[in-house]
Amino acid sequence: MKRKFFLSVVFSLVSFGVTLWAQESDTGMGYTIEKKVFVPPRFYVGDQAELRLEININKDLKPNVPTSLPSTRWLRIDRIKVERLGDGRYRVRLFFTSFQPGTQLLPTLSLGGIKLRNIQIYTSSVLKDTGDTQLGLFKGELLLPGTIYSILLLVFIIIGMPVVMIVAYIYLKKLVKYVGFRIKSRRPFLYARVNLLKLERNLGKLEEKKFYTELTRVLKLYLSMKYSRNFDVLTTMEMRREIESLIGDRALNEKIGELLSDSDRVKFQGLTSSRASMIKSLKDTSDIIKRIEEFAPIVEF
Image (tube, rainbow, N blue to C red; front, top):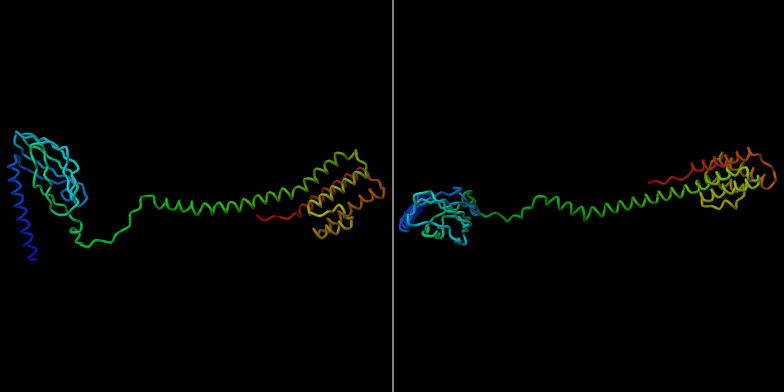
């Protein structure tokens, strides 16, 4: 404690002596410093501060702002302004940035007719103020605002977009397959419907044998397209067995058997059929086809 007190007293005496010497020297140079103010009063390494000097100059001298500013490795002078206060009094404003803590002397400032010398500045130290004399560990660079979002967006573009495209491709492929299946599965029905309407329009123009030949041809071709089997070469009994194994609906099987039997009697036995019977046969064929469509396979999507 005594040693610290002794050093403090010595430092104060030295500072006071330097100040007196500086004032005497300044008086000999034709000016006197009347006031010295720092803005802010306390500044740290790297801070830009301002030193305001109010000086009294001999009337035959006039200060001017220098064209070039002095600098050292521990101090950078940014700019100097000179303001006249009147009656030989001037205010010199010195803007600077200090890079070294502690008490230092400014380099000599040549302001035209006068030279400012031996001006002290004191740069505060964060380490001394906080009492922490140990340097901390190196820390990483701070991220700019929005960097995290930019990184997330980049990750999404690199990883997320391919995943989204793959999933979209899979579902699009399924959709195209489903639409293609529906179009293909409706083709036999549309074929049968168009040809049954054609037979209905030409009912008065066709002979009975020709009518039933076309009617059974439409039904057999519909079944061939629907189930990918050649029904045209099958007999009536073979067709009934095939339908029974494919659908398993006894009422529908009986109805197909009756229609084919009536057609065979007209085509091969020479029996006659009235217009009403032919209209009924058309309706029965249309009902059979609609009933079969109810058993069409369903594709999951």
